[in-house]
Every structure is written in C-alpha cells, then in structure tokens.
Length: 231
Image 1 (cartoon, one colour):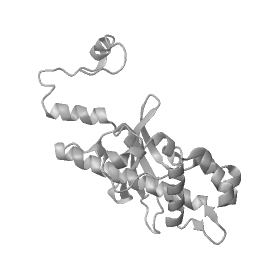
Image 2: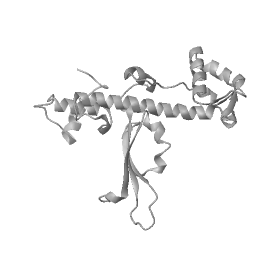
Image 3: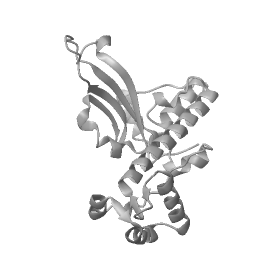
Image 4: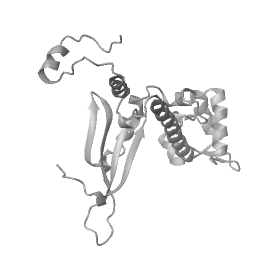
C-alpha cells in the first residue's frame, strides 16, 4: 500500500464526470498514477487515482491532485442530447457533422462553404444545417470575407457545450435526488441501482431480510436464471 496520505501533499480533490466514461478515460489514463478502477464486465463504473503536480523548490513532499471519476451514463441512462428535455435546461447538446472531419479537412481546417455543404447535406437535415450555420456565426467560426468555416474551433466549442449540458443536467439530477433524501447524493455512487438500493435500505424495505455473502450467496446465486427482473 501507499500508507496514509500526507495532507500537505494533496493540493486538490477533483471529481471527473463523463457520459460514457470508457471513451474519455482512454485519453487520460496514462496521466493518472496509483490508478484504481471499478469495472463491471466491459463497463467502466468509476475509480480514482492521483495526478502529480510540480513541487515548489525546497519542499520534499510530492504534491498531487486526488482524482475520482464517474460515468454519468451509469446513473442517467439516456443520450446527452435528451438532457435538455429531461431536466428542463436552457441549453442543449449541439450539432456535430462527424463525417466532415476527414484527415484532409482537419489539416485544412478552414473549409469553404462550397466544399463543406455536401458533407452537411449527406448527414444533417435542413433544419440542422441551418442551426449549424447559426452556431458557426455565433461562435466566431465563420470568416465572411472568404466564406470559410473553422471546423476545429467549432469542434472545440461543441465539446465545451457538451460539458456544460452534462454539468447542468447532472447538477439538476443531484438536486432532485437530494430533495427526496438528503443522504442520496449521486456523486457518491457508481450506478443508479446502487443509489436505489441505499434508498430502499433507508426506507426499511429490507427489514427482517438477511444479507448473504461468500459461499452461501454463491450457492443461492445458482438459482438465478436470466437477466434483470422487476417485481
């Protein structure tokens, strides 16, 4: 083990939340030390670790950021594009024409409308194309003098909007859960079933029931056939 952490070494406590964590995690896992992940089959439920930072001259303590990460998809099982309607948000997931991002176009970056439009027409509806153009102008990605569009800057702003939608939706979800029970904070759970189980326990639903583990549980588990059931 690593022993008891030195409080002086922890410079921040950070929680990272992603919608479909396994994808985002591939970009950061090499930067995380003392990594501890929670897997369930092929799903990445969450985990934690450390990101070390520069230590000021004269200090011998290694300084690091304590990082925890969660997958909001395990808690809110819907597409991010549904967050706006689900949580009555004033913002929404924006439009991204993925097929536009070919190797050639990414290298060129500033794409003339005549070249860009066929990509949009093949992937988006007319309403979405109109919305896409509007975003380009509002996000300063349109260069009117040359009628070109900066697809790299647009992708950056698109990702920022994704983060804003996720944060707003997840914050609303936390408030809703804590309004039911102050002890039910989704940020302390890896999945909705885990949160639901704690709520049922607190409501007394399992009174006069026995919790089993080890060999007795393994024996009884053999009676289970099929997948999830509800009663």
